[in-house]
Length: 480
Ligand SMILES: *[C@@H]1O[C@H](CO)[C@@H](O)[C@H](O)[C@H]1NC(C)=O
Ligand SMILES: *[C@@H]1O[C@H](CO)[C@@H](O)[C@H](O)[C@H]1NC(C)=O
Ligand SMILES: *[C@@H]1O[C@H](CO)[C@@H](O)[C@H](O)[C@H]1NC(C)=O
Ligand SMILES: *[C@@H]1O[C@H](CO)[C@@H](O)[C@H](O)[C@H]1NC(C)=O
Ligand SMILES: *[C@@H]1O[C@H](CO)[C@@H](O)[C@H](O)[C@H]1NC(C)=O
Ligand SMILES: *[C@@H]1O[C@H](CO)[C@@H](O)[C@H](O)[C@H]1NC(C)=O
Ligand SMILES: *[C@@H]1O[C@H](CO)[C@@H](O)[C@H](O)[C@H]1NC(C)=O
Ligand SMILES: *[C@@H]1O[C@H](CO)[C@@H](O)[C@H](O)[C@H]1NC(C)=O
Ligand SMILES: *[C@@H]1O[C@H](CO)[C@@H](O)[C@H](O)[C@H]1NC(C)=O
Ligand SMILES: *[C@@H]1O[C@H](CO)[C@@H](O)[C@H](O)[C@H]1NC(C)=O
Image (tube, rainbow, N blue to C red; front, side, top):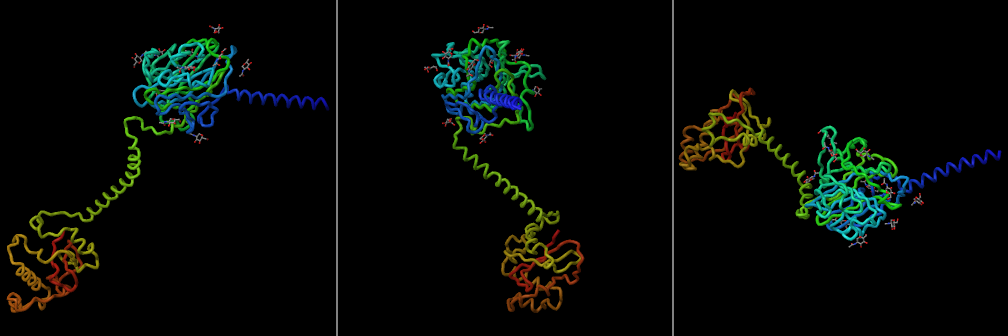
């Protein structure tokens, strides 16, 4: 009985031990993956920030440095110097060459005084540059051609040991197996770039490989290992045991120099003593920041662009609706001008005017239809009788006489003969002895007594009211 209890306790103790050990291993920080740095265990200084998610190493402030190190130190002993890491950077270079940034393995997290603002990627200054006491290994993404560092271009990747002058470097490019050749890539373009750094402690070989992150961002899981080029950009034999201190920290350093740049780390995976976990490219988020790059552009334009965005869309909708409305209206009043109508243009009434006068050829305005078409009652508000005078007279007439004759003409053309004035009455009207009477429009008819409901073409007659008054216009219109 006691033996069983003892062995049970022993088992429990072993399980507890394994559990505690694994916790400690994790705490040593030998292995980690970050997609969002805001809660990562980092030591940060300078202008670096992780507030928004990505590690924002440097921003548009010129002549500044930024550092970020994984806080927990790692034990590098003779048993294993192997490590591997991969990360995604986005560097926005705004004006001319700026400094650049680097992945760093350093004995200390405090590099605040190590670099100067315009020299050495925030790692080295002119006093300590090249000294073996630095114990620093760095892989630089250099966007500046510094003659003192013998840089080969303003777009290169280099391996630095205790000095800004690289032991090995190459223009930034990646090997595309499909095309079978190296393709140049711009480090400062703002595009997402994947970088693998691998060190094999037994072979003492350090490899650096680059590749562009596919755009647009993959929607489903895509592991970085699937796009890793088969040929590294840099491969260099290095004895890290001669360089490293026993405990080291890993992280990033960047500086802006005379010209500013935004430098981001968007994802980071690290493992000491083995292969780092592949990054899932669909989990990488774009850096959220105000790009507005060129410094020459006045920032006061930003509200203007916002205003344009705010008002442009409703404005466009408004204009489109306006155009549609105009086209519909045009269509509604569209008319065909026939050859024979040309000579009557001065006396002609537009379809639009007729449409309005007859309230849109309403059934209630219909007087009847005959062999020549339908006849509608219409009203021309602003027009007067004098408009109907033949324009060929060009105004060479007496207005009073013209009006008198027009009224007489209409009186004489009423449909029922008994309504028409006698010759005697006409003479009286002409001599001014009697004044012309008002006539009933309903009765008048104007020579259309045989109106029926059959329709050939549309014709329109106008008057202001049923009780016809000569102050208003009464005309027959030849329609379409
Ligand atoms: C850069 O970052 C620092 C520290 O976070 C901040 O004080 C400064 O205003 C930033 N500059 C720009 C231009 O965003
Ligand atoms: C990163 O995490 C912080 C805190 O949980 C959160 O507020 C932020 O939105 C995250 N950022 C991204 C890009 O997921
Ligand atoms: C590193 O390893 C050595 C020997 O293996 C050990 O004595 C030391 O405590 C370790 N340091 C840390 C920080 O784990
Ligand atoms: C590195 O190790 C040496 C001795 O091995 C020590 O003197 C030095 O202070 C260490 N450097 C740092 C930055 O810890
Ligand atoms: C250079 O860096 C070293 C080490 O960080 C520091 O002690 C020294 O003060 C720096 N010198 C200058 C001129 O900044
Ligand atoms: C690197 O780029 C620079 C400038 O673009 C060019 O002059 C130089 O020849 C390139 N070096 C190699 C090795 O291709
Ligand atoms: C390699 O080149 C091929 C052909 O131009 C292209 O389709 C492919 O996307 C390239 N691969 C990478 C990783 O750029
Ligand atoms: C480094 O690259 C070389 C040459 O391509 C390769 O043979 C070696 O296995 C690589 N080492 C690592 C650790 O990736
Ligand atoms: C591509 O670049 C690598 C590393 O710089 C080099 O070893 C290789 O020869 C280059 N390949 C071609 C086809 O240029
Ligand atoms: C690497 O450096 C260590 C320490 O300086 C030395 O003991 C060892 O022999 C070196 N290994 C090789 C392969 O050069």
